[in-house]
Picture 1 (tube, rainbow, N blue to C red):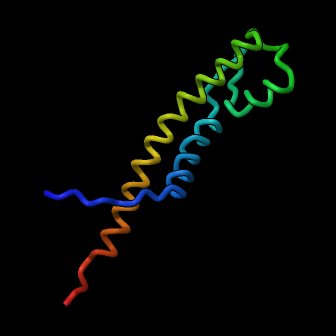
Picture 2 (picture 1 turned 120 degrees about the vertical axis):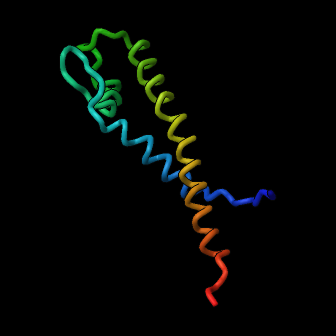
Length: 100
């Protein structure tokens, strides 16, 4: 069995990974003081006013950093896999022999 080489579509990989990264930031999954907060709001609160949170500035920043890594690394990895599947399907359509 010979392996075929496929060229990585970096633009597709970027957009798929970006979508996979942004979706969790819009889901309300974090709870502060009894209220559900979307992670995207963290960035606004970080630069606006952190006095109403129990976390210190460094702990707050570390929370965002870990959340970003927790969703960023899998988004890049899964994005590459999805991009690879799309490239394979495109290449299979190009390489398909014409019907006789």
